View 1 (cartoon, rainbow, N blue to C red):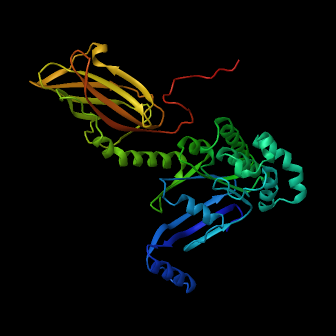
View 2 (cartoon, rainbow, N blue to C red):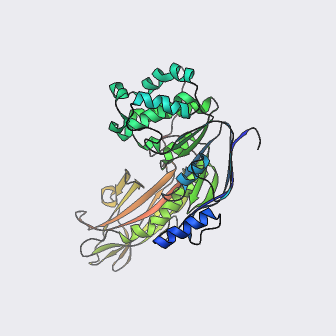
Length: 395
């Protein structure tokens, strides 16, 4: 292994015996003792390969149950791979589980010393850094209380503060940024950014694509125990988000809001010419054409409301044909069509939903709603929902 390579994972796999009955448990013990393959097993990970060089940052992403935590446990030496190998060069500090490594009956101060020793710090170094850890954790008088009285956020504070004082070659975190108050999360992110600038190496597990893109240069997407994608963080996260939306497209279609009698209904939708109920992928600043066909039971022209929201439901934009004074094109006795164009879509990269609502001609009552997903691609470190044209000026 090259001296620049801090972590090497080659052909790693992990499986566990399936144990449903007492006889299964006996057989699994015999298989383990005799060092033979389990007769019935669950394959958790298979054929995972990647390297992590000093100074690099890699995110592990994927659904719950994809194998991310299992992979981290093997990297940390807590579990052994069933196949392949893991090679680690240098010191590692893992933050895997809340309260892991803490003795619940000992105080926070005592646990600082014990965890620092486990991370390989010398006693003299620990003595010099105890107060630094206490100050970083911001636990006040609770530092001398037993850890069993700590909340989950307090445990994260203490664990992260100990790791920060150790300055390991490789920092491994598993969703620790999802716990605790916002101010401490910002403090942790600032520390990680400084750690990376100074040449530290990061292996991050998170469901927050914002944190993933902010802190990591590369990403590995695990899906059902296999590597689905590996490479540039923006490319991999956008593929993951697009897949996630495709997965939920049918569920959203089944949950489609069809109201009242259906006197006015959305009969067809095309996004940039695509009339299938699958996500439409388009680059940032691209053209967006939305064509909507509506059914009117009484033949009167309905009103169309167009809305755009982020995939988590955050509203972005809305417009109404009635407020804009636009009438639909009549294409039949009971059929109408609207077309709306956005010449240069200013949405930041991410996944969005275009919501189309059919209303009565008086725009009083909502009768039908249909949603279509769009995925905006591109590379941007701007935050929020839309890109605003701007210029920086130096005095």
